Image (cartoon, rainbow, N blue to C red; front, top):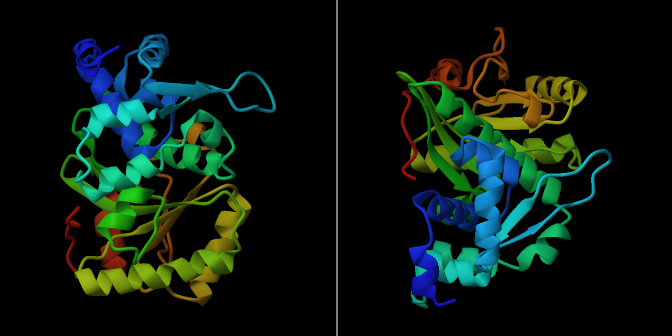
Amino acid sequence: MAKVAVADRLTSRDAEMLRLLAEHRMLTSRQIARILFPRERTARERIAAMRSFGLIETFRPPCSSGTSPLHCTLTAKAFRLVVGDDEAAPSRHRLARVGTLGAVAMALRADLAHLRGTNEVFSQLIAHARKNPGCELEVWRSEWSCARIFGGQVRPDGFGRWRDGEAWCDFFLEYDTGTETQERLLAKLVGYADLAFAADVTCPVLFWLPSATRDENLHRRLAEQRSEVPVATAYGDPTRSEPAGAIWRLAGADMARLPLAVLGAASLREKGGRQRAHAV
């Protein structure tokens, strides 16, 4: 089917789905539904259409019980529709094109659960915003876009700007599956401190941890080795959590867990300074 004929059959939501997959590499059918559609069934129907057009590949990784959701990734053909055929396309698109290896390669990625979990946190925020006027995920950048924007100085799993009314928070997300040592997690904070100094912008680094035990242990280490940038943590299964809610524990602060939007100003009260947005 010619590119023009395919494009003529795409809805605005289809185009947004393709753009999101270009940016974030892989999204599940449940995440796509949460972000764009009123029902998962509608999302699956549009995913099936995109698959018939040769724009999306899907797979279901094995799971311990039940059936896993469809995992969706773009084809090379889809990238040509998203970014065009121009070889001088912006570097972020060339980087994305290199990362399009197909469903088989995606299914074999050792960090598939890590990528899925990272995108789950952000998709849950979008779902919350769709149900709550005044809330919005104003910015969502992938690991690959962050590498380009911040020059490799830091490599977060994602960057976001979350707003709830007048309260807002820029944040870097580090999604931890428990495979790295806590020394390695703490070592990442050096790069964030260097970036904060160079950009004159400080925002919290959020660690999403797999368990309460790991959360407690990290805070104990943070108390021993105070970070130069604000750090907050949450833990558990993001599919059963509310990332916008009062689940974030700010390191070094003797207070209850905070909502994400409130965390922006609260983290700076601990470190001092004025809340400013990153230029992303």
